[in-house]
Image 1 (tube, rainbow, N blue to C red):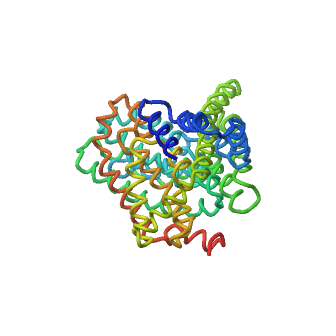
Image 2: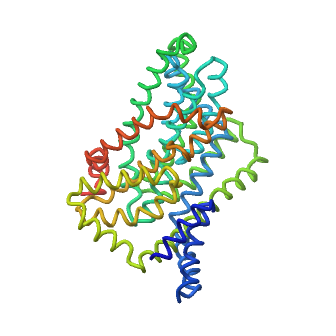
Image 3: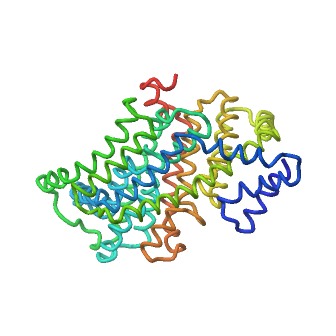
Length: 427
């Protein structure tokens, strides 16, 4: 156990990419013990030989096809006509568009890139505070990782043998709770910002109707994904595969923005992202198997039972630990490394694993905007062509909002469990 932990933190501290850290730490254990190398290879292969994991790759590809095929732009245009009459209109458009896209792409990075590319140039032209705008878009983009079809919810379900449908339903209310808070913070910022934040246009029901009709094919993607999963007609992986086909058809033959010659490059890019994630998953599976062999989960559970008296104290400890750990750690790695430990311990406290899994993922969502390594922060700052330090200065009110929602869903379990319960997925 000691050699496993030393190897992990050593490779993290010297700057080895996290995708390699798990595998290298496991290799250190193999070298120092008599564990046969073939067993490590077997664990790596069997861990990745999982049909459900393919959903992550398909959802990543869907997000890229939405951006190239014009689906994201039609949704943004619809959001513009829906909330473009509010003070700070472009900020409100970013939030609404991110919420709608979250129900289709499953990738916070893809949504952040799409919305940043579409709106930040116009925000600059209208003299918005670009640093605040980039921070807001980075925060809104993370909604894709809690609102289904979130790739993080898929990963934590696979890692801990939980129902994807239950987790998807459990993530809806927490995700939607963030939206009005973001809209209020955007409105308050705009009110203090002067004439630059004046509404772009007056509300027009006719124009809204036209943009809605144009967006219907794009909005249909959400029906394909979530309808297939919740109706029971398709698994998460099958729905994700259907979403890829649908996005290609709509992008190429309905909107005409997607060129067939672009598909190989898009597939290659999605494959490269997927390969990195799967390499991380495989290494983490080996790492977790070695931890289980060394009795780490049992040791942690015993320590918690001896020092933490109540389930509410356990949840507080888990949240504090994950928020601190999430600052330097990549979110997927957090799920793979820590979720089996915390979810096993949660069962000992009588907590519902679906509730704890959604709370865990929400911590990972907050990590995406937590300095110094917030993933969506880097993307929005890059598109805005601003230093990450300048964007980070405006993240703290948004981070506080996300933390407030985290506390609500932690200590009011029905905010997570209500929808899965009425659908019959949990008791």
